[in-house]
Length: 503
Ligand code: NAP
Ligand code: MG
Image 1 (cartoon, rainbow, N blue to C red):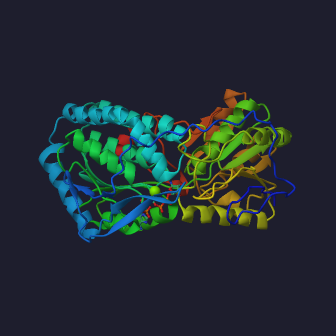
Image 2 (cartoon, rainbow, N blue to C red):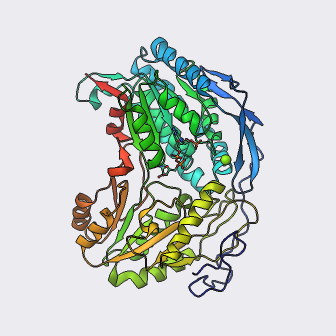
Image 3 (cartoon, helix red, strand yellow):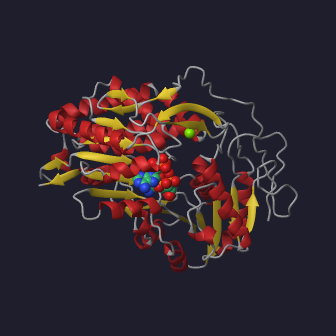
């Protein structure tokens, strides 16, 4: 065991042999540079957004959403019951029949374009609320989540009047009402990722955000209201798993789009079996990031670090397994430690923060439990020595060496800033190890040779294979899984297919 983190509850204390903290003197110390939340208005209470109106839940129940970096309550949010979900589905059906499906694509495009512009105008506020509600560093919500969400609306605005070109001249009809359920790791981006293609294709939407991160979906509802979309085209119902289940079970839904865990995805697949509902599932992952000896190592280090520590590892396609060609194992580990020693964990609103808060106490417990299993099974743990804030949920960037393929840390999704490192000797061994998982969402290959990247990409059973880079996204690029990472694609021309019936 090797952690030297101070003050983390349940995390062992300093002084153990394999801990590391390089002494760069004051070279990496920055003055605090917090983004001010002063101008951001978070209401004390949020209702449901149904049929274009802010509606109190029929149950009169509300739940708290907290800031995981401070444990402070941010707002009370309505808990939608099955009756509220029903009202939202009815509103979406009415909007579909009365306005949205009838509207020419070029008119729908204008609304979607307007949403994209409004997101850009409110980008700063959205980034701050995203960071406060979910715990991710402001530089990520500001530079990645919000701009990419706007890009999804811009991209799909462009498709709305060109659908016949997407399907080679065949007519594409919308499906009807889409029920969309999203997780807490990219709350605003996932909402955009789901809503934009549905609207472009002429469907109406009932979306349920995750319980711990509902706020930016509610701000998106405000944007949609300001953009004067016809009432009921987009409905936002907040709540927990039961609200999601009510949406899945509702007979008035034509399509379910789900992003979340494989366990819940399987439950949803069983629930919609035998119904008319179409289904796409974006589930978990255990991506292999494969580094060959001929790779540009310094560049690979950046890809490894961003692959697993980006958003505290709360990323379904995180490069959570690192496969190193044996001859470069030691040099990569040394450089990885050097790079990690420059990382700053702390206030997510600080522009210099690299590692923010873990999204919830429950998620922190899951990470700790899996990390403990890695130590018990005999892997060697290396955690960055850093000061852990007193309040909030935190886990230091960590990697394991000497891990076996059968260890839980090599098989199960940790969904935290924890990397499991293994080695290989030949490309075939790398492929075999990378594919030795029930998941298949993404993979990375680092090498000097383009031909090797293409060879590996054809052999790896993963929806996305990045070559000499990692965690790069674009609305025009389809994303989705193999095996138990789900089915269906989101983004690009392929993503449109999930929201239309082609004649
Ligand atoms: P989760 O527990 O499956 O939750 C996902 C969403 O489903 C949440 O809104 C959740 O509500 C809701 N939900 C829970 N139980 C439900 C049920 N029985 N019926 C319908 N909806 C239900 O997953 P999570 O822990 O929030 O998210 C992490 C997982 O998402 C990871 O496994 C990750 O890999 C995966 N993920 C995948 C992708 C991808 O594109 N493949 C992207 C991001 C995340 P509450 O949160 O309110 O309980
Ligand atoms: Mg929260």
